[in-house]
Length: 127
Image (cartoon, rainbow, N blue to C red; front, side, top):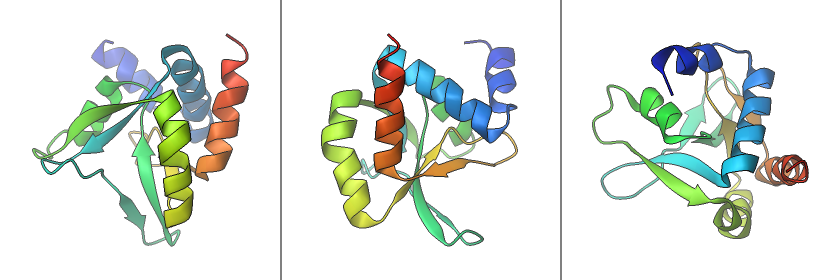
């Protein structure tokens, strides 16, 4: 994806980015996260909202863009079946939300893992 295309999508509002995420993930069947050298996933604590969340992206290019300037982070793909079977229950158990496709303005659509799973399953039924 071109830098212009990336910036265009990242410049959308949270709801539009969420819809884009759902359609691309439903098509590609994978979710992207960032991990450090120890293979630990990036988790963000939002002081304002009082929540902790796992940021997710629909493609590695978005995760790479987000990680610019952070040398120890790299994109990692999670297949959708693994995300549903392992990650959603784990995130729910740990009380972690999911931050979907953070934007250029650092806004992010935060949702519960189970809700994201339902939305993705609905989006996949369109394919």
